[in-house]
Every structure is written in structure tokens, then in C-alpha cells.
Image (tube, rainbow, N blue to C red; front, side):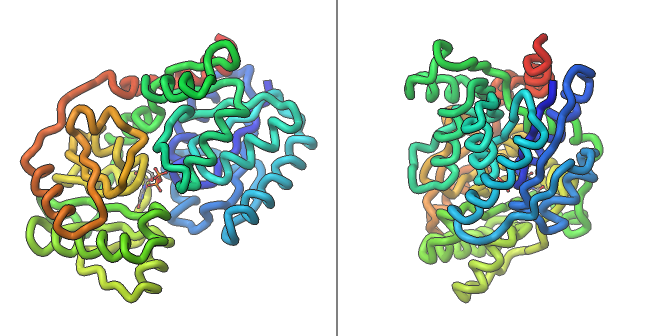
Length: 354
Ligand code: UDP
């Protein structure tokens, strides 16, 4: 069986690492990988392939920048050509980026069946580009690998049931990855002598592209750093640009985006996580660290339900307050919430027809 996998952004490399590894144990599956180029900086792309021991992609499209339509359109045309040339039996996509949508759409139009990993997640905020990408990708997929019960329910509520597609609750592949690589994680020098620090990440367009929200988050992080505990922020390239453009000053400990093993090292050593990332919310939970999510909604609702994660508006006082409350909380040990590290194996077995 020839499987064409499309990846392109940092979180997809993390997810694909463990899934490709599981797929490689099935001699029946020949996986061919396309990297769209959506993320291209060495520390946003290459480092993940080397740290996660992934083979080099078979196709590198080098498509990045431009508007959403431009980027997605160019990917669509290139992936369509690759599908026609390679004639895969199935296409596999991850998550919710433009690369996900382009891959799914190109395949569906050519009647190549699509499997979607991390299907069914919803923020119910149609202003998020990710929400549009997820909904459309789920709609054209015939196999939907859902990480959580909430994801299955979201699909059912949209009329996507077992009658129209194969829906499998597999658990979350990011937990597999965190478990697999936790042992070899690395604490970056900057955090070597720090205890009780706050690990922050910030890159969602809803925060970086809105000057008032961005100013609120920057003020909040500066205030936490001054009044509660040191804040370490590996700065996403989009955020660095937005902060410079807005003339804002970050008074926290900043660094370039770190590799996955360094990120795991920081997650294990920190006391609290502040983020607007989807993946990092869960990783905080995997290492039982309280999390403050600076967004209006989250797709990972179960973490809010058990009190492990708090949603917080992008406002200085609210962020300070949420971090204070988080610092007094503990995270419940709920082993089964994301499948316990068995998701990639389940997905690979299904794809292999087992
Ligand atoms: N990550 C990383 N280095 C960083 C920031 C994040 O390795 O400097 C990892 C993080 O641990 C997670 C993934 O990148 O595994 C999440 O990606 P991101 O936050 O960019 O995307 P999202 O999950 O919000 O789609």
C-alpha cells in the first residue's frame, strides 16, 4: 500500500515522527513524505527531522509566505501533481494547517482516500484559519483519527458519523512522542540554574496579528516575570516580527525557537506553562504542569474541565492572576485522557489493515 503523507509545519513534524516510526514496522506500507515548506527555518524544521530521527522527505516543495490563499493554492497545485505522478492508495494529513487542507483537497478531488490525524477538534471560532482548515479537511476525509471523546462528538454533531466515514478514537500521538523522547530531553543552558520558572510560547495569529491583544500578552508576560517567577519564551519567528513591528519590548528571558528535545527539557523543568499553542497545552499536561492558555477558546476542553488548564484573556492583570492561581494548583493524574501513548500504533495498525 502506498501512503502519501503531507506535512509542513512544526507541530506536524512532532506528530509525524512517532506515526512514521509505527508505520515503518508494517512492511506492507510504503510511506512517501511530502514537506510543503510551510515552516522552513532550520530551527522550525530540520532540527525536528534530525531529533525525531525521521527520514528526509521524498518531496520538498519549499512553499512558504504569501497570503493564506496564495500559499494554499500553490501547495494544492504541487501536491496534485505529486499525487498524479506517484499514484498513492491513500493520503495522510495532520492537524489544521494550510498544508493539511491543501493535501486533503488535492487528494479528494482526485478520488484518493484521505485519513486525517487529529480529526474532530473544534474551537467554534471561524475567524481562526486553523478552524476552517480542520472543518474542510474532516469533511473530505474518509478515515478520521480522533484524539479525544470530544473530537468524536464534534464530528457526530456535524453529521459526520460512522455511516459516512470511519471514525476511530485513537488517543493523541503527541503523548506518544512526549513519552518516547522524554528520557532524552535536554535542558537548555539558559534554564540550567533556574528553578520554578514559567515556560511561555506565543504564536497564534489571533494574538500576534491583533496589536491590542499582542500588547496585552507582552505586558502580562513582563509582569509575571517581574512579580512571580522568571519567564522563558522561545520566540516564534512570526511573533518576533509582530513584536518588532508593534514597537513592543519583551522584558522576559527570550531565545530562538528551541528543538523538540530542548522543549521537552523546559516542559519537564518549569513550574507553569503560559501558551496559546494547541500542542503545548497538552504537553504541559503530559508533564503534569498547570497551564494558562491566552485564548478565548481551546480545542482541548477536557483539560479545562479537570482544572489543568485555564483560559485567560490577553490582558496584563488577568494573566498575572491566572498564573498566580495556576501556581497554587496541582494537575490531576489522568492517565487515560489522551490514550496513554498508544495512538501511533493504533493508527499504523489501522492503515495496515490490521
Ligand atoms: N515546540 C518546540 N520548540 C519551540 C516551541 C514549540 O519544539 O520553541 C514544539 C512543542 O513542544 C510542540 C510543537 O512544537 O510539540 C507545537 O507546535 P506549535 O506550538 O508551533 O503549534 P500548535 O500546536 O499550536 O499547532
